[in-house]
Length: 287
Image 1 (spheres, helix red, strand yellow):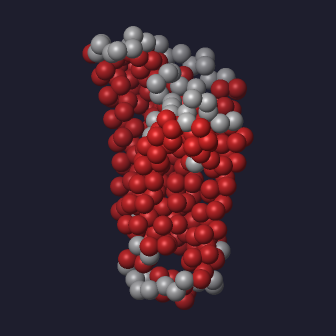
Image 2 (cartoon, rainbow, N blue to C red; image 1 turned 90 degrees about the vertical axis):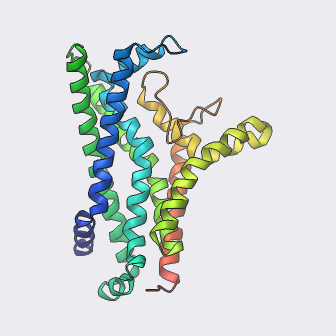
Image 3 (cartoon, one colour; image 1 turned 45 degrees about the vertical axis):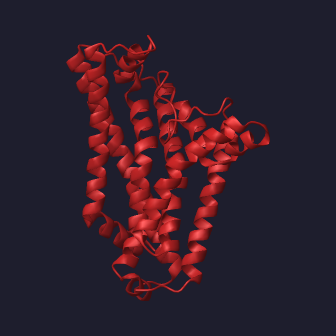
């Protein structure tokens, strides 16, 4: 099993797609910081008087890690879907899936190795993105003439950010597994990417209209992904206006309990994994 994981990691590391996704993540992190900094420095008139102050606070060192994690939980989710879908879907597109199956001990081990390698690379990408966000916060602090005060970095703060790192991964996981599942179901990269990203964005719109409908329909989003993702990402404790998950959240008048959110996301993740392994084991492969 270790050899399979090493082989999958080697293949993913050598693919240009993986490097492109990492550079895109870093590029978007840098862009977000520079745009916020430009808005703050330009003293742009905003409808909410406290919005400019919130933006400036987001650039500060105390919010460097939470803000980077917020970027990862939103834009990083899209990149995680692409990586997961391409990890398995490319084997179908390149017609190498039969060769992979005949050279591995079992379908279960092969798919497990692919999934574990994707998870490892996503975690590495999160660390790199987190480091990039912190560096950008240092740069904007220096350029803006803000104080380099690290008194906020208490043991409690560091522990909370460590927990938030894993919370962020927990909100990435269901969407990543969704892309992985659809790539297997469609025997191609494109179904995994298209359907995974499509559900990521469209669910927010359906959630909005369900809440507007009221009654029992308004309770349905509590058992979908986006509302529960928002409940977990809200623990980042960012300045007002920077919370929310992939779609920005904020639709539900009453956020679900954190325990409820974790259970729902874990349930979806488990279902997606089971379906992916079932389809991969039962269906014939082509190529």
